[in-house]
Length: 137
Image: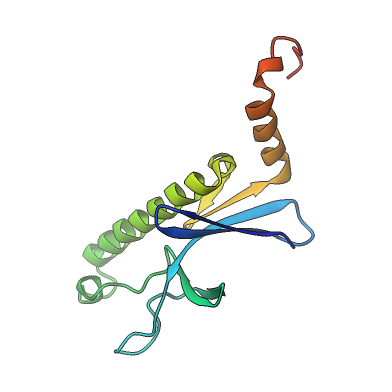
């Protein structure tokens, strides 16, 4: 299994492949902790280099959003906007650390990219000068 760790925009970015597939998954992580009221600050956790990390996009709801009435339109709209901000933060950091991920599929703060797409992006980036010499590119 391939696992790459880089830093970007103050976050730790992880890229790992899925065994038996040609997919690479990119995700953004930040330090997490146990909260005084109980539970962790993130719902998705892992250790990276001995540090407890939580995935960006999986933060615990802030008190202001928790206080909104359950199942209300106001809460749904506010939570979706809050989650969207986290996803945008994660995508920006991922692409800063791994530019090839810009061509991947974005979902819930992660980006997935197939080997075929990675190869095509790399070829276009590194061999663009040959486009006039190789019309089939």
